[in-house]
Image (cartoon, rainbow, N blue to C red; front, side, top):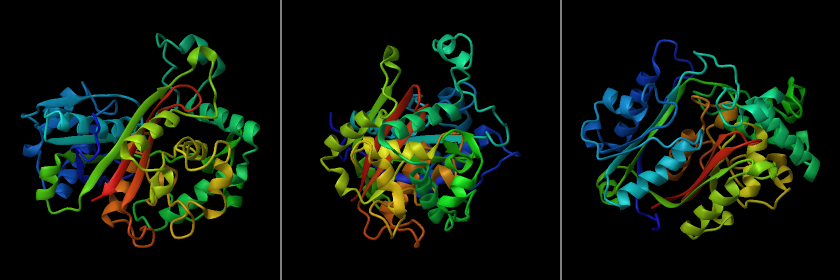
Length: 388
């Protein structure tokens, strides 16, 4: 079943806080839900489908639905693929709407990793997890798993640290216009390279921020969307995939977006060259370079050259990306940046991004999510969205 124009994103809201020592995770979820529903012109009483992932406290969807007072739910989904979960949820909400299982789907994300610091250790660092015995002895953590992919990409294709740095530079040019951005200062390639080396070849400024906060989306039946006083944002295409180790037969230079992107473009009936704005998951600078290749914006191995010299800066380059500052500069709530990628794509399509970074006449956008570790196993999801 094609999802093309089967559902619309009617509400999108990003929590403004970046540190919330005075709130619980459940409170942040609730505030995000209220914000997105108000943006859509709807209320909790209208919601009959609810979606959340592993960031939700307690029994996940059960605890949060009860906490929010969602007592007329006909459909729930707790799919967990890390930071890509919320893009998967948009597609699953569209499927549920098309099948008649719900009419108004609420998707929430929230967390407090800045107020409740974690050690940055990969999920496999827990005995009993299948991969523990094969990976933990090597000291696997999130940072060095991405550094491993970056080092391999450099070895295979000649990608340079300077090219990776351009991703951060572009994000900082956009973040300067975001009053909520954690890192609003514009940086240069030299600044990135001068920042401390954390895991060769990744410097400190190659890494995303760690923030509290969250966000929410409201996905509705098209008939409902047309009755609301908001610009229509249609889902045109969606794809999801998981990439693992393949029993040791793994290529570190590509990701699950190779498949999820192909699915989304085929369903939407458009090409990468048609995309006017792209929200690309940016947990690290290498994540962006690899996703751009896998999504077809440039040839394999050419991602470093593609991002160089300001090519991702709105108003300057060919492909404006992450105009809110992204995870590298703005916000990476709950260590999961997927939902903010959809939120900024919606802003662009509505013409509601900051005027300094708004893409003129933006009618077609892509949002991409990655969850897990690029160097080991991860989920990938891609959405193509249209301003009706």
